Length: 353
Image (tube, rainbow, N blue to C red; front, side):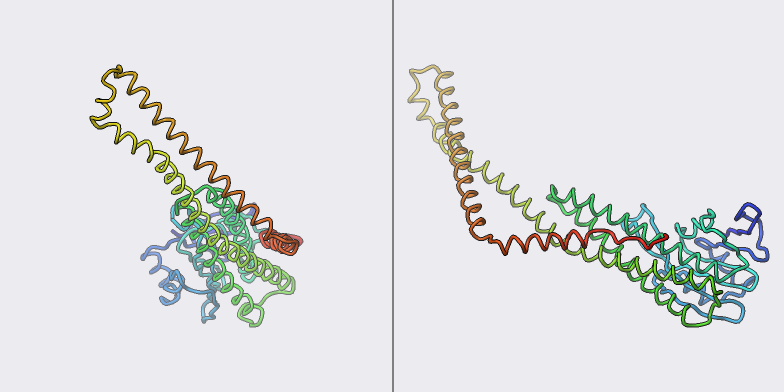
């Protein structure tokens, strides 16, 4: 799909065809549209293939007719098992127009189309690049916070879980963080190259905006690294919790089996013909009623013994834990809890954002 946007009196406006100083936005191009880009705008076929390669890293190349930038943009698509991922986006800067090529729609470009970037002028190619990179960094930060909130919700479910579904969700979040970290570092290399080289000439006021974009990108990298470290430790801890929950369920089932073992033994013996012979002079409803009450009493007695034994074991474990925990151990636990709370707190945003 090809969309054409131009600067109008009230902001960005769609146009029927490409014009001078317009933005040609190509989303999920068909083979016919790729052939059109190759013939009309003389875009090299290898560049089109690179832009549509899901594993392509961010870079900048200068050609005779245009300058190509490939940036990694974040995507949220709930239709997939891995909802958060990244895709390459090609930005081709011609002398009289801008062409962007992306294999899927993403919020960074959608927000530019909606006019959320103030002062977006297609005549200024360098400013357009900074707006795309800056908007991408903001969307990265927003998605990272969403992943953190999603992880907290999964954490609450994991405390009661005995299955692996929640761990699978955490694994998906960890994969998304890995994709984000890799793409952000790739964008960081691109930004450093833009600062060091003259592939794109930035004005004096745009140099400050470039520094802001670099700061936001680094902040997103740090946040992704922190969340990834916390998530890795959380997965190990909750794998143990799931195993412990399963052990508790097995313990309960074993306790139920043990409670019914003595009544089963007595019932199997009493169900033989000898019991009927012993109770011939007693009405059947009285004999079997007394027999059933006896079985219930045996089951209750067994349950009471097991409960008393469990309480005694818990008291011994608690007493042993109190003797083993000294003042140094308490301070160490408090120190580790404080460090964990500091690590799990979100990074503050840069002033002015």
